[in-house]
Length: 486
Ligand code: FAD
Ligand code: NDP
Image (cartoon, rainbow, N blue to C red; front, top):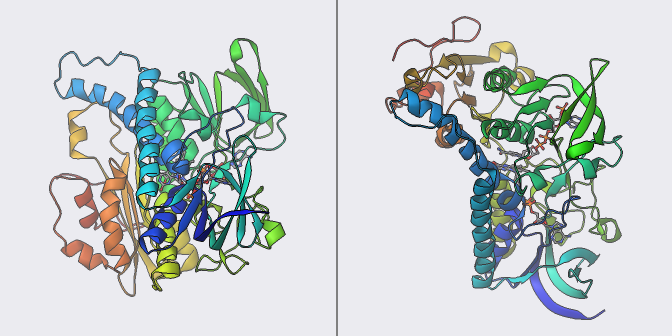
């Protein structure tokens, strides 16, 4: 075996975590190599450097979410007095996807440039572990080379998983790996799943004019505040989305005109309907099966997620892992990035700082967005006793909505979960417009240990939705959450 290059740090996977770690390690003076290779989806969709977030995740999702909200604004424009706002106009899927693709391609190019500028050697090759310090690289034509590295980082992320028991399901459905690159409008769509991906995609597809149904196996948004999950469902139903609850698909058949005949079981009863597209959003599995982990002794759990210590070390001393492929880590871009940067600083910058996984904010980009930080009501009640926490709540209507007939008045909600003993805010939930923008700043306050009284002492910016978080007085179980007046 001939070694073609030797590195201090070799990164497998050029997504959010891998790119951040590689660039940071190079900034600290390490000699760095990075391999990124996209295995096409079962339908043949493929993309460039940057991983899930850039190509088939956060970025195209947010752009399509925006496109859908922009459509809703047409109704708002009429109520706001704009003449000739064309509320009956149709959406042009091709134009949107061309613009989305063009942005993604710019990002792919920028990432290559950044690696180049930092002198990170980039390999567009599929990597597997040969030995604990040797990586085998395979190019698209099957050509092989071997590189050696003192430290190896695995940051291979995950790929969509499919429900079992439906024959040849991969060929009959799409996943989020295909949706953003579809050449044509998906038409009448069945989304299977009920968490982040399903609700976000089902939400924007409906907003773009597709007849959308979402098939829910158990509950919406497992792990999130369930009162808010219920309000998300109400808002989505109000927007025209159909939910098929407590149901699982049992068969999918491709019929004439390329339509899909889907049969499902709901509370023991069999139903069926035809759809143009079936989008499977039933979770993701880590992309570790072909890395040869067992051969070099890197331990995984039964789902293929790599088992790591808190300092990102695998069961092999010089091999590290970060991001979606690691057991117990949140599957979010900013956590993968931060983890990668901190690891590089520890390995090459003489620093000691570890990743902190407490109070990580997140937003679900459903048609009405939901941002949260810390404990849900259910988690707080489970962890503490009912007497140890107090929950403040409010149902409010954004000022702008008063111009409009079309919005649902009871839709928006805020919830603060506070420890009785310390008055520390340990959970914040906001369902309303621009949730990501609203909750981000509050994450700083909560991370610093802010109390309810410190929230109350902060002067709001009027008139905004965000100020509602600073004026909560209604206590859950005692007071009505309905907010009235200014
Ligand atoms: P990835 O970004 O998946 O990168 C892994 C890379 O490794 C890929 O390029 C892959 O092709 C490559 N690779 C795999 N195996 C090999 C190999 N053997 N050799 C070489 N290369 C290999 N997160 C948010 O924070 N906000 C959002 O709004 C958000 N929206 C999302 C929407 C969708 C539809 C999805 C699916 C995810 C979303 N996420 C979001 C999650 C986010 O995209 C991931 O958490 C993040 O991309 C994980 O980064 P990573 O570095 O672990 O892996
Ligand atoms: P999740 O693992 O979060 O949820 C999977 C969903 O599919 C659940 O509703 C689950 O239901 C359902 N499900 C699982 N198996 C089946 C089955 N066989 N039949 C029917 N339903 C099934 O996966 P997602 O793909 O939604 O998201 C993956 C991760 O990506 C998220 O955890 C998140 O971290 C990240 N992400 C982040 C986003 C953001 O930050 N805005 C956006 C999108 C993704 P049940 O509850 O019954 O198990």
